[in-house]
Amino acid sequence: MHTPEVLVAGETLVDLVPAGSGSLATVSGFAHRPGGAPANLASGLPAVGHSPPALWTRLGDDPFGDFLQSALADHGLDGEFVERGDAPTALAVVAPTEDDGPRFSFYERGTTTLAFDPERVPDPARFECVHVSGVPLAHPEGRRAMLALAERASDAGCLVSVDPNYRPELWRRPDDAGDALGRLCSHADLLCCSAADLAPFGLESLARDDPEAAASAFLDAGPGSVDAGPDTVFLTRGAGGATVASDATGADERVTHSLPAFDVDAVDATGAGDAFCAGVLAEFAPGLSAGRLRDVLAFASAAGALATTQRGGFGALPGEAAVRRLAETTNA
Image (cartoon, rainbow, N blue to C red):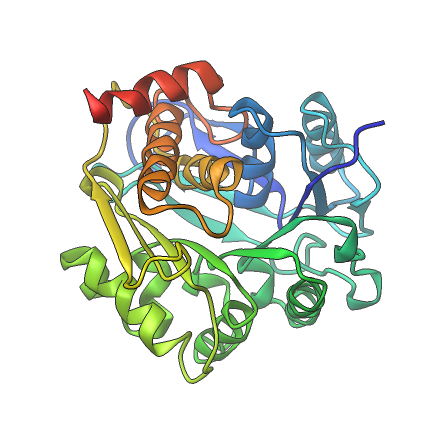
């Protein structure tokens, strides 16, 4: 029986995607697809050559929950940590944009999706790596559960990866986001983020203008007022490319690399960042050399780029061989 090396924790929900072009007010209908950054990442890990992860997530007691459970099972993600709650499943309405990727409107209030039970936190000592989404922190119980998981994983010696996935519209008290995400990041070894994810730390504008400076600033200052945090930051900027900064290579000084975005025939940017993060987790290990760290960045960037050539974020990656072929073009 397969024993997962990675535990992915966070939301699985339904993406409602407009059928056709036009504003959300005028489209003729919507298609429903599996979504949620952790679910997208979990489905992407086997596609990029990693063993299937375990997934701690919550599904609603409704037909959408049934739909998601079947989709997860089809990707080998129907294990012991997929829970069914007694409330509906959260929905995210996807509005494509031309400038900064898709935008999401969340319908989460009164659902089970983010209501993780702090008393049911999986034992992280069973895993080599634990990846935690920041979205459940917007829910009081989800916040307690994810912070407990990250702290226990750090204490157990796991590699702790965090995707802040900052969604300001989900926070009932937006001022809480910086503190909560800072506490989560304080337990992390590895951060995968976009420029927007650094907004609670006051680094979003810098991340868009000078990503290497922003990643270094986060490493120097720690997550907010917390004097701890990751020693490696991967930062994505969509069409602007991607950057990594690390103090964990064994070099005498910080290592930074940036790569431009790959030129692909993109049709949908939904889940591109999750595919990027899957690429990172598939290839990263503490203590990589500076050259290998650049290879990880190229592989993750290729995964993110290829995910945009398919519609939807869940199961969008075409496979490890295609990702490696595209990544190798950075050395051509």
